[in-house]
Image (cartoon, rainbow over all chains, first blue to last red; front, side, top):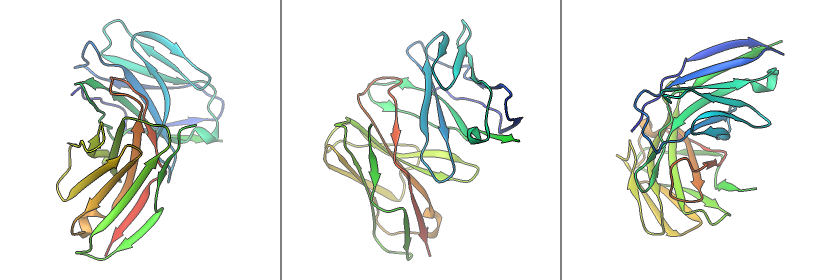
Length: 111
Length: 114
C-alpha cells in the first residue's frame, strides 16, 4: 500500500495561495491521488483527485509531476474558512478499495 | 447529494458493555467503511465491506466486529467496550470497487467508554 508523507502543519494568511505537498514514492501504476478536507467535528470531504499532470476544479488545483512520486494541492486565495486538516490519499486497486489516511496537514489561516 | 447517516452523534458507555454503531447510506453504494480517529493518529481503518454479508479487516480490527445484512446499512460492534476504544468513529461509503473512488463520510460518533 502506497504510503504518503505530508507536513504536519502549515500557517497562512487570508488571500494567500497555499501549496501542500504530499510524497508518495511507492505509488503504483493504477493508483489515483485524492485529497480530502476535514473540519472539526465533521467527517472528511472530497476536494480533488488526479492521475497525472494538472487537475483544477472550483475549489483547488492538483499538480502531479511526470514521475507521480509527489503531488501538490494548491488552494488559491485562502480564507479563514479554509482552516482545516487536509489529507492526501493514494488508492491501491486490489479488487476492493482500501484507503488509508495518514495524519494529514493542519492548515491554519489567520486574518 | 449522497447522505451517510450515523445513528448517534455522542455516545457514553461503560466498560464491558456491548456497543452498536449504526451507519446508513442512501445512494446504493457498494462499499462501506468504518474508521476511527484519534488525536495525532489521523483516521485508521477498522473494517470495510464491498457487498452485503461481505467484510474485510482493516488495519485495526481487534476488539471490533461488523455486520452488513442490507446494502445500505453497515454496523460496527464493540463486543465488550474498553476505555481504549474511546474515540471518534467515522463511517464512509463509496459507489464502486475501483481505485480512486470518492469516499462520502458521515458526521461521526464520538464514543466515550467510562
